[in-house]
Image (cartoon, rainbow, N blue to C red):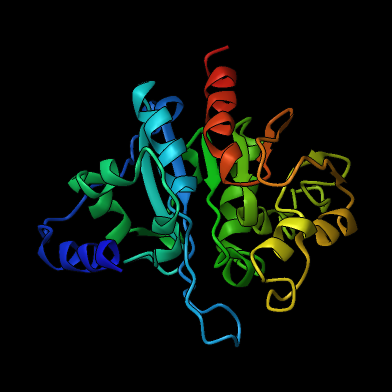
Length: 253
């Protein structure tokens, strides 16, 4: 709770100066868009949710270290809700995040998806946390941006519950983007472990298979990253860093 209080305090004191996000098509190859949820209620449970911090920080710092500009967006724009439960688990980047005024400001003033021009990005990565199960699925802006990036030879990626974004993305030929592709995402076993199986609106692994994807299982809470051409997916928080590394490797080819 103390760290959650720190998060709330910092949110009130960060400078209100406007953060710019990239608009120059010529730098597209160096630009990554990370999408966080805007949803903060865990169904009807009375609990709060949001984005899962390591599924932002682990990829973000990998991209930054490799010289990529990273913009952060959300369906509604503005402050993305942080699931405070993330601070209950030790992580090497928690304190780095709390000390990183630039990243925290990006999270608190995310760009609305409606303001995103997909031509500006080589990569879109959908971060996890349970919130995406509610606001990533039937989102026209997600479909618009992700399909355009994919058809412009860019990379579409997602980690854990962020894979909910992939369910309804259709390409210009009318086919689902994930049809015939191999994917990894949060498993039924992992949903049971965190006590959400009866709360979430659907089981992600089942929906992905319904759309024609091949679901690749990994051990619960262990790294599992699946690369299928321009589609790259990770199963859980332990997969977030490796997912970013695979993306960077492909971008540098």
